[in-house]
Amino acid sequence: MDLKFLGYQWRIHWLPLLLFICVFSLLMRLGFWQLERAKEKQLFLLKQQQHLLEKPVPIEQFLNDFSQSRYRPVLLQGRYDIKQQLLVDNQIYAGQLGAFVLTPFILDDNKGVVLVNRGWVAMDKARKKLPNIDLMTETQKISLTGIINEFPSVGLVLQGADEPSDSWPIVVQIVNIEKLRERFKYTFLPFQVQLKDDQANGYIRDWTINTQMPPEKHQAYAFQWFALATTLFFLILWISCKTHKHD
Image 1 (cartoon, helix red, strand yellow):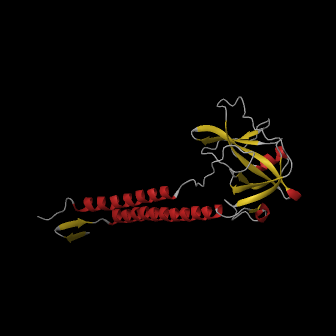
Image 2 (image 1 turned 180 degrees about the vertical axis):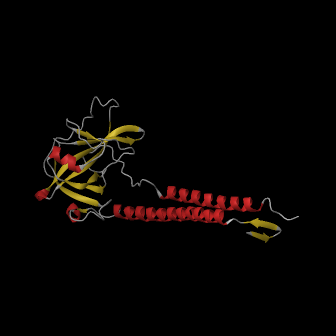
Image 3 (image 1 turned 90 degrees about the vertical axis):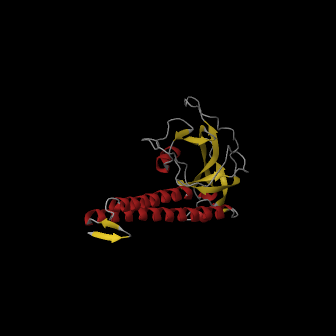
């Protein structure tokens, strides 16, 4: 089919036209989807910032409902079990390789056991010598404050990354509370509590809110999809008319 407009003859073939419409629609849909994801991430980060400004509440409020607990400041009462501790390996801080120190905290009145992330320590690159995390010797009942969060993660998950090492402290790359239960003999709560930086018995604590993909990256991807759609549109327009101008 031929169309005439502004002195140009536009030659249209139905099959390429349908293919163009499908691809163009897909690119535009991907762009708008990325914009929606960016909006969701912005709302998520705003919500978490609001949580951090709240006053600490007893952790017992979240023992039966974890859906809205992330980044909530909480108050814990109980005691540490310093004889059984956990190192979550392959954690980068300031360009240096290290691990997070997670220590079981037994809540009062048998309300459960939570892993308290006491911060980051440097690790020997050869892993021949583990860091000294036995600086805390007191095990009496204490109160502490922290922030509920998901367990630490790594970018590349290797097979066996959640398998606990044989010696103490246990070393893993991924926290699997089901596998840890066999070694610790505890049923852990399904989250960690990051020890606040004003609390005693901790290491380097530079807790930041983060997501696997921030809003800015979603917006950048959206721009790329829209740019591809625009390029495709003008490319098809140019191909259709460049050799069919009337004299």
